[in-house]
Length: 215
Image (cartoon, rainbow, N blue to C red; front, side, top):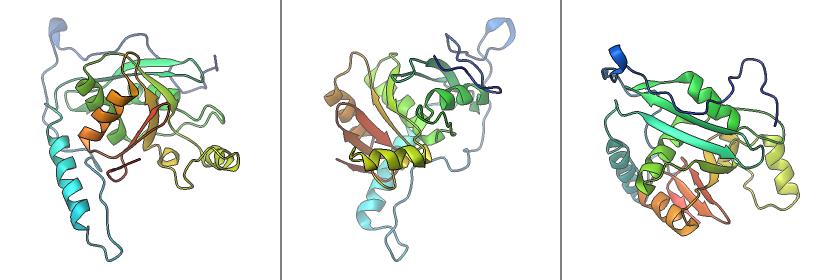
């Protein structure tokens, strides 16, 4: 297993849930939306969103609005199939992000070839949290590809792996996953139903927080 670099926390074996006095749940605190939170926009060359894109954005906004109470803890678990590393954390609770938990996710989903980590787009984490709830599972996501460095992306293109020259993996806005006990058909269908970004499939399912599309 790869050694953890200085400054990066080792993954915990169980999620943390903030509590109040005597172990009771911490009271919810209202908050403003995080900067950049919400579905991505799609624009035509003239700057105005085309009608189909406007419809996609309206559906996406509705889906984001139905995510549930801000005070509800949001937990995610990942297992990197290349490194064997796992993480299982509550990354958001009471409307507050746990930056330590987020750093653990960022590290486990790093480019395993170069060792380079990047902050995973928080919208992608919220999409994965909602997808997990729709699937009604607590199984970890088996991650095939999370963040991908430009160097790795260029190498994969050279060897004919069919990756995009402008892959959203390079912006930490995409992930390729499987879920134990869930068929790829069911996983793809649930992701498509959310309409929160792109969905593709191979021997895994790709989800991203780019424009709504599928292949």
